Image (tube, rainbow, N blue to C red):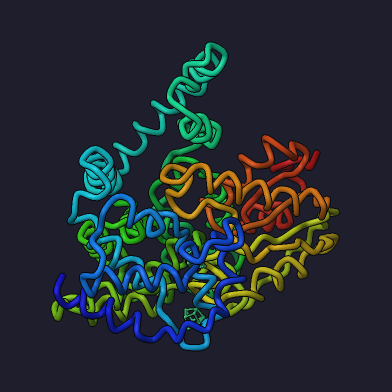
Length: 433
Ligand code: SF4
Ligand code: SF4
């Protein structure tokens, strides 16, 4: 498979006609102005690796790791370059070299293979982080400059650390959640791995909204991880193993599998490609992928039962890259927001640009991530919304970190949370400050 992937990577790079149309769309190029930090530059680099003109040294792979895999370049590319796929393959191949060093490789493999597949271990890890944050350890480490001793990158990583909800909040949703009113569909729902430990309220809201829209919602007890993180960060083998477990977790007769995390839905819609070389799994993976629906996409298809409540709110919508560029879903979230009485959509400059979350980018490239977040927050402050709505947990956490720092009055929420509030306005789920 590796040899095949190498050739594939080379073929894909030949699709690029070097027109440069992708450059203005690329956040890392916008930020640095460097050709090497652009999609075209990165394609040259990947091609040079494939042709053996360059070897994968720590210096040479820097721009491979600095890429957000936001896929904004794919949206504008006239040649149909499959940039995301090329980058996944390249990162997986780089992983087989020692270019990233033994320790980061060890930690990544440990997290992807020993933690992500096991919800209980994830829960324990989240609880340990909550101890660090909640018992004053974090505040102490900051006050006495201990975090600063570890360097600027560590200070930034520490500032991105989100509040961890109480253990009771993170409990598993019911396995079967009954439809309200006449049943329209029977769907699976991906509860997810990290997302459920950090943003369980968004999951609960999504399940509730689906029920209100006549869906019986099944949440597998195994709580599978879809494999998007290892897929994007150089461990395709771990991604395949997680994808297999995800496929096995959902009954084949469900009408759809609804996913409220744009990053996860994008990865799951591409399972066919992940198993392209595996005759045993390919058909099943493709059939499964065809049933994946993003939360907003699914509600618009149903169609949505408009909520009765009124929310007097100025709302800015920030489009997740993996919704807009990877799944090419632009209108459904806006259509849904427009259906909520009282919501006033305010234009947000750069709403299609990456916020810097990009999976584990806050951990792997905290400085670039912070720079992109700062630009995003500047635009949010200019738009003066009461709330910013997104559909991806990574973006939600990143924007919440930005709001803590720059815009404490702005509430950052998942579209499902806003809808939940509109369906039951008598229950105050949040109060815009
Ligand atoms: S837009 Fe497409 S073809 Fe043009 S340089 Fe970028 S990747 Fe290459
Ligand atoms: S995926 Fe995003 S960051 Fe990477 S080259 Fe394309 S536009 Fe730039």
